[in-house]
Image 1: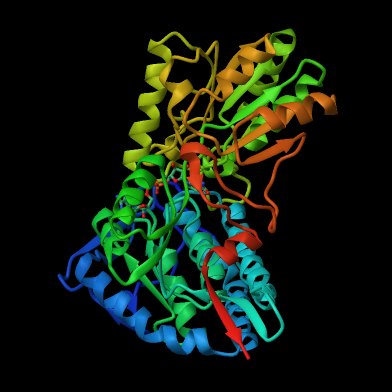
Image 2: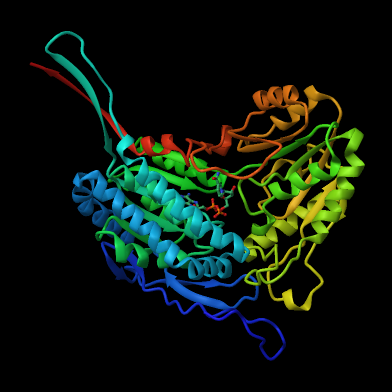
Amino acid sequence: MSEGKNNLRGQFVTPDLGFTPKGLYIGGEWLESVKGKRFESINPANMEILGDVPLADEHDVNLAVMAAKDAFNDWRRMPIKERAGYLVALADKLQDNRDELGLMDCLDSGNTIAGMKGDVDWSSDTLRYFAGLITEIKGESFSEKPGHLNFTRREPYGVVAKINPFNHPLRFCAEKSASALAAGNTVVMKASEQAPLSSLRFAEICHEVLPPGVVNVLTGGIACGQAMVRHPDVRRVGVVGSVSTGKSIAKDAAEDLTHVTLELGGKNPVIIFPDVDPKEAASYAIKGMNMNRQGQSCSSTSRVFVHQDIQNEVIDELKILIEKLPVGLPWIESNEVGPIVSQRQYDKILDFITSAGQEGATLVSGGGSPNDELLSNGFFIQPTVFSNVKPEMRIAREEIFGPVMSVFKWNDYEDLISEINGLEFGLTAMIVTNNMKQAMETSERVEAGYIWINSNGRYLGAPYGGWKASGIGQEECFDELLSYTRIKNVNMRW
Ligand code: NAD
């Protein structure tokens, strides 16, 4: 790996990853897809091809599920301390490869390097967290009368399918398999087709640490994901993706009544009350956008509801702060905003920006590609703020999943609450006020699964999950671990 060097045009070329994907990872072996199809992954900062990977379909899914099924018996019957040891060893190996994995995700997804290295830390922390909880997978018991005992056991499902989005490629591989593995399941995982490389590097690390077949990694598109969900030997599915994907998967899963966890999209509000320092409020709103992932974050606080008394000051400060964010090649540590992951997402976001202008929103800052020759080959979009946004506009209603913030003016509290709750989404919300009574009441009334009051960030152990169309189930917590078990009740008389 090099730091990046000047090419002939004086531009930074992609640092060398030194990684050639070995193939689909199935049953501890590296395989081409059955049909031999492949697809390329590009660096969205400059369109360089980073590598190509197999395009898996239902034939490869069948092989992967079979391998996971074969590995299940030994994995579930292993002494739990030993199983926990495997997870800790995986966490350690990820840390050993932190710089490489961080860079790989940075190049493949366009997210900035510091955040992607942070994702490796979060991945290791999650593996250790669930390894530590392994002795808490307990049943309950009661005695109906002398000589009788009724007790429950928590048993794994078997083969778990995991389907991941593009915005945290490595992190979701590790984080989303940790609880399922700790509970004694084996995993078939699919990487996002928009950033598949680190998932296959993750597979190599699993190969060094885990018994064959315990984790199987596929690269492919929607057909591959559908085949995973529809496979009769898959009894448990965990998905992170958009609302439309979640709805489609829920329908497929319903065919076999397969248990699903869905972590889906958001259109998350920041609610700013008039009693706060406008500068502080603006800074919370910007931090909540996760601009180091170009706003491509499910929890991004893209709807900013500002009380009319401080609206102008907050908008002025948003403009100052957003224009200070350095947009550039994401592997340069000082840059804080990189490119959008793919042409598809880039076009979609620009279309939202155009529609906002056409529908009468006022552009405060950004609104297009940066005027920088160095970035002209990539999918860069300036961090953008619109004010004067009305609830009926497209940017007010649909998830953009990009660096676009919408400012809404409010003055009536009841109208504010109904506007916030008026969408199908219910993932996160942020409340900014010094009045704790107001904050607590608002946190009760907002329909969302994860709420910040004068804070932001994520905390391992704190349940994360969406309400309404933003998802089903809670993750990053003890309940997630239990959700990868099913209860068996045993009655015993002596
Ligand atoms: P996406 O929904 O397009 O794809 C996600 C994954 O699902 C991909 O691997 C894709 O191939 C697969 N897929 C798509 N349709 C499928 C189908 N019908 N059956 C089976 N698999 C299918 O999402 P994306 O563009 O990769 O990621 C962005 C979305 O993910 C946003 O909506 C974002 O909010 C959401 N997200 C949610 C969370 C959360 O924790 N709630 C976290 C990150 C991202």
